[in-house]
Image (cartoon, rainbow, N blue to C red; front, side):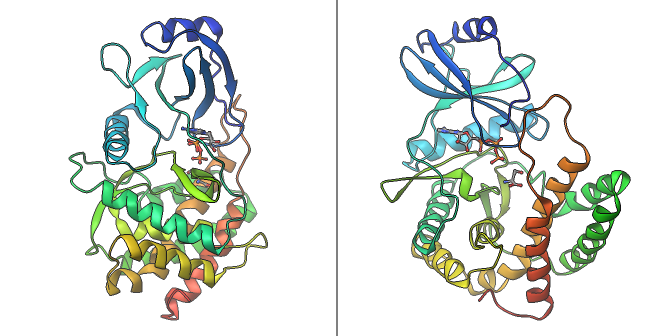
Length: 319
Ligand SMILES: Nc1ncnc2c1ncn2[C@@H]1O[C@H](COP(=O)(O)OP(=O)(O)OP(=O)(O)O)[C@@H](O)[C@H]1O
Ligand SMILES: N[C@@H](CCO)C(=O)O
């Protein structure tokens, strides 16, 4: 359960006084997530999500995120609608944290998505990329390639023996990535964290994309690689090529994917698995005091990193 910051009834009623959302009925902590504090907020006018942004989501990044969500929402992509207060302000302070209210979306995420769900997710990502076209904001990726070296150094400073061994693999992968990163591929506003837990399904159809707080300008094919790396493994952590095939087909049906982008996918999947191994390792080595949070296992992505390293260095395609 990710609750880093507790909001009292008094804090909440003062906060809500600026909005046209009626009176608070119930504020309940949300049991998923590792990054920010999330509450389900019920008011006399309906259901919402209240997010307080924590250490990986700095206040100066949020106008980009909210602007992107508003554009996607306006273009009919299924994302939560940001809610403004009476003065038209979306981002406010609550308990000394930047805070945002968004609409509550229907549906549930899948814990073990099959081939059809992977296809839908590929389509959903492509709709997001299409809907983001022309967005005027700019945010470099705070957790992109250029950040991985210093994240690894920070991890090294607090590493135990097991972490040290993994860091050696990470550094080896980083050398490869630095040498061959395909900077020339097309960029756009990307989600960069579209894991299965950030995609909702309702009655068998994709019903919502959430958690835009890492959104930034990135290679679009890297965004697809994040999805491949997080959706296309089974519960035993085995890569399922049919899921990857369906996801790429779903994406390509909505948004073009060049031969060059496609050929770069194994390397970009290696990058994505390095990113998530590192941030998970960092969170394990530097836990936040007083936080209620379910730790995510760095090994899950470290073994995916091994697989994509092998694929990339052997010059194999994604299947
Ligand atoms: N708009 C929404 N509508 C309904 N439920 C939501 C919404 N936003 C978030 N949630 C719920 O809150 C949970 C956590 O949200 P979110 O993924 O944004 O948190 P996080 O801490 O950033 O997590 P992550 O570990 O994925 O980065 C989601 O898994 C979902 O159950
Ligand atoms: N989706 C990420 C958390 C956000 O950094 C993970 O599962 O590690």
